[in-house]
Amino acid sequence: MEFYIKNIDDSQFDPDFLQTEEEIAMLLTQIETCLFTRKGEVLGDERFGANLEDYVYSFMYNDDMLKNVILEQFGDYIPLTYKYNTQVEVEFLGQTERNVVFVDITVDNRYKIEVYI
Image (cartoon, rainbow, N blue to C red; front, side):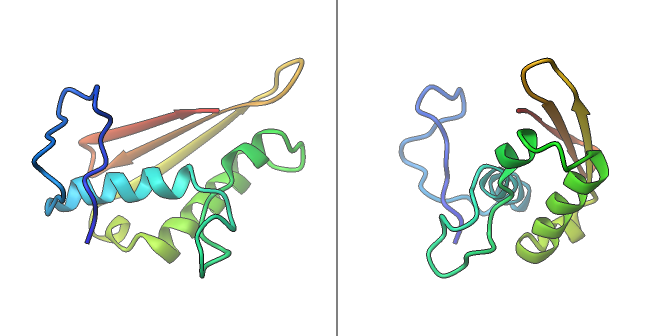
């Protein structure tokens, strides 16, 4: 079961709707959960989570390495990414104080998730 996770200020918020059955909505929620969860935060599975912020502050990673980390998480935990064509693009930009990372995820050539870290 996937829970309907929306911010109260979201234009599509429906307080009477607790669960979604639409696969794309479930996939987008799973991607968001995976990207913003740190390893060790999920009880019973120490490997779940992308730890994105850790990679931003590390100078040991590049675009391809982070892309592979994300794709590995998707492969292990989000089987719907196989059903719906899911593409990941990562771009590191070196800044003076810290790196900046852009992650663009396109699902089924219809939905785009953009993450700026």
